Amino acid sequence: MILTLSCTKKTPKTLEAKVIEKIHELNGSDKDPETFAAPEDEPPYLYPPKLKLVKISADTVYLTVINDFYLTQSMGTTGAEDYIVKSGVSLLEIDGINYVDFSFTMGDHAYPGTFSKAGYQAHQE
Image (cartoon, rainbow, N blue to C red):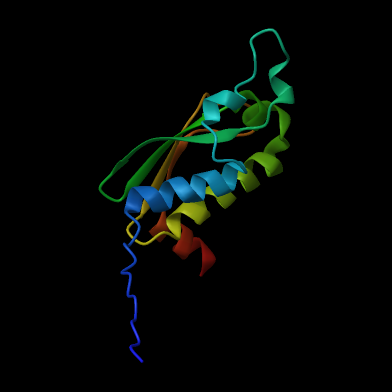
């Protein structure tokens, strides 16, 4: 009797693949976030925000928010803060990511900016 073992080496995910996977999880879909954009002839407050990866540079993830009107004008301050914190922390948990930059039009309940792992950790202490 000959026993043959098959050994397949699992290729580790790249940093970009990990970030994209997390964005898909946060968006609740692996579709291009642009497909969820509010049509110009419909009220923008009907379409929840979706994250779109712009780029990864060194240890920073750059994002834009599709349907930013919903984020900045329709979710309230607490809802917008929760969305940004949840998204930012989820991405900062990825090894190699120390900053998350959110780009969107500032509104009454949220404003764009860069969030850091160090800042989040200091806030937790």
